[in-house]
Length: 385
Image: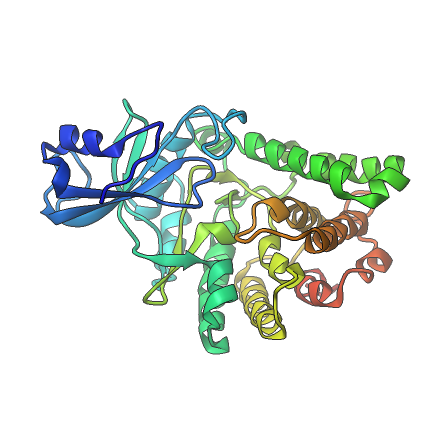
């Protein structure tokens, strides 16, 4: 059975570009594609690709991402189509094929248990990116919510992710303008996420109705602190780094997907904390999330070449708060009203705890966070970090 998206049919595309019959390929449009239309193509036999493709060996399946000038999930939201060229370049950098950004491929090589897709072909005419298939799996939040993984397995995954992210941040500090000019302009994504958080605050927060000036101050703080121009400690990262970008395969391997926003980045991993605010979650899930976050944080800090500066901590708080708010509408499961209210409130408390001045943290406000959220965040925000 072959499925396709109404706006683009991959099957005729394959029959043309590979000169194969329609019954030789099965196309499955993958769920969760937020920015792009993403599909897995499985061939009826191992397929040798044309010689101008970047893969000399025969393959049984391949992942395709088709880009448009708008978000696939939100057609009214325009996004630069050059994000696909950024992802193609990022994958070449990660593979070591393009060594123009030191520290990236080397950092990945130091974490052999972590996988990223390999670039196969970039069809610039159809705006379709071909990548190797990392296999069936679940994004990290769904894996934690539904698979009841052991603590040792969670810590293994968290350790790999913490080592890679810290190595990437540390290995790409203060990138040159020549480097960043050829990567993603993160202002587009940051602007979208921040404006979406502001909208949710206005629509969902009782505090906004009771104290609009105070809430607007927090919204303004979010815009100001997360302005890429205000980052005094720039480094490179995925930018679109959230639990939905992490795939745990059926074999238990960890993969990182979606490199189209690779460029100047910010810290923050608030989407995992959403698991703790979801109404259906059990104590077992809370324990699992805390175990993952504790290992991720301890590994990140131990691997990082620098201490966590005051500015890092403040940007971390703001980013974390924004993710707790925006994530209520991007989470792997639908939030009920009560869960959404708790998450938005926790996000606002993070914004408030970031303080009103540069590099200050209001620890009294920080203490008002739910205990299970505060525990994970203090791993990064403790005074001696």
